[in-house]
Length: 217
Image: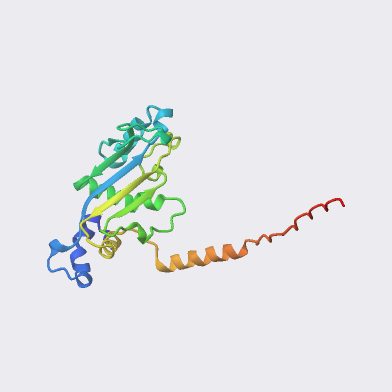
């Protein structure tokens, strides 16, 4: 069986989704607009001044595009952050780079995730966009051995033209996003209930208050 690319699967969206969502022409079917990759560096930059440069270099290798710095919108004294101070990096990919990155994310990076059990459908918002939280950037094949020392996480948002949560979920499923099955969710909930039952209940012991000394006659 021929392996279809993400772009080829996207082209099939009209034929496979028109019955459920009543599309009248192929232009009404959802498409991927862009992919936004965010990395927050926060106050870690103060400990290591080259932190942003290091992450920007690794993001460029992963996405194929240079990352842009993002500054704080306002000053927060408790976090020791000043307005305009760089606290993160963002990459927005479109076109050929977008499809290449999505292909790599679905077929290479996600399967390399440790203890992966599927993506929850709650990750799709009400306007049909999907946001994933990646704990370790080392799941991408561009990561070198020396990169294991400074591991960082990221959020990846797939922005689509879908209008609703249901339409977006169906579209991302068609593209090959590995969502959790309903059966797996139910099994996980059962296991969690069993764990709670096994935990021994600590019995509370009530101690009677000491009697007040009698007043001398």
